[in-house]
Length: 255
Image (cartoon, rainbow, N blue to C red; front, side, top):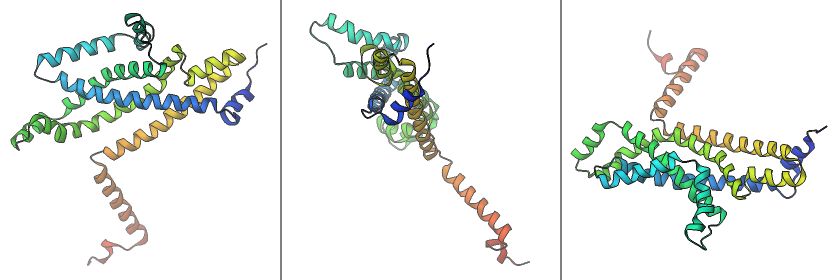
């Protein structure tokens, strides 16, 4: 009868001298961060191309989105890993490069739609006011439109990065030792794959939880009503103190 070995889970979580899963978590994290950053930059350019008045910019952007949003990410990774060496003999991308390129190109397509929607949420009068002040289109986008759209972008961007942390598990297909790959490889060798998958799950949950805290902090900092809410909270606390203690600004008023 097969048994679950909690001691194995405990060992790889807290007592592993080789830090196998800690190193794998670092691999998962830096791949996610780099791919997400490149995806955001690429998505910004694609979004601007989509809202351009020039068809020769609009149609290539739409074709890009059609391909990368319409085909599975796993297929895109395999096209680079297996297909590219067949098209260009002798060109074999390292596993890290293959994953980063595929993840970044795929994420750029999704970020493009998020950024385009965020730009569209800014009132048209903002651009008209900027033009009335003598700003050209690029300057108005950089100083007026995009900063306002950034507040709308943060929540879906946070969700995309959360998803990216988990999507890195696809990298295990080509032998990259991120969290899932480490669990599969060492689990197959020692016949404790279920226990190691539990360890990998704990690390995934830790990474996504930390990111959720960071995301909420960023959203709070970008909240346009933050200063007003802080002032209201301070006024409420002061009013409560006056009522309880019996002195303050209101106690000096004449009756």
